[in-house]
Image (cartoon, rainbow, N blue to C red):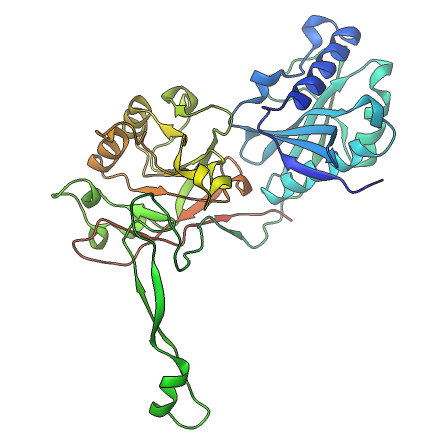
Length: 380
């Protein structure tokens, strides 16, 4: 088999639309309506679902998805191999990837629903080969003679937490925000010049950086927007470090992200991270134009829901065409710090992690870069 590439898919391409349409047609041919649980494009565009497509060169050969049901429990969805690539081991590759991701997220159990008809016999064999066994209906499923439910224990022994870097690297000459100067990074005392101050063979480097506060991945405190707001030195560490995190996947929702996507989420006391995927444009001209943003009603909902911190991997959490900056205004007035220009959010599960974004303790300063990261409790 030629090299396969598995990538997170935003479900916008015509190839994946065609493959999923084929999948739904096949399900309709073999399963009665009340027993069909395959998801269409809209059903897969949910924040709790991660969808992968599998490519062989420029050809789409398969797909699969992982849905977070609850903390520690995931469900496999939309396993499909393109008709021209059946019996080539594509399904096993996808399944192995999903199981690996479920373990990385710290899930203790991985389950699935598939059909009971002979058409699904190859799928049953594949799942059994990987250790899945039959189980009662789970989540919202009910007993159905046309369905087979299977599950697999992934383990329950805690392992060391894994750390995921969510920050861009700051470099000399790098533009973060159009119209603001790039950082100037240079020597204050070079290694060569330092040798005159120390014993032979001993040297040090003292660097110097000249930059605006809004550089790289940074955190806004209330003082950034309000003269009477808390500055960086006044933010309690409890609002910046070890905060229980939740992730919302919004890469398929277009530019305005409204309050609807957050409906039903428990956000009180949590760090909400919004994954838009816009970080793929970092350090290109495309990063500055047409970025995803939260709407004013979304910001009000987050404040009313008691979110402790909000982060986003986009150019600005506000629509830069709106001079009122309502999202900054609402969140920072409610003392909810904002982290912008994040990256790597695709690595995180929907929940089950702690978030850290601690800036230096600077008085009369509202914004500064942070080394944002998440600690995800793993299971081995």
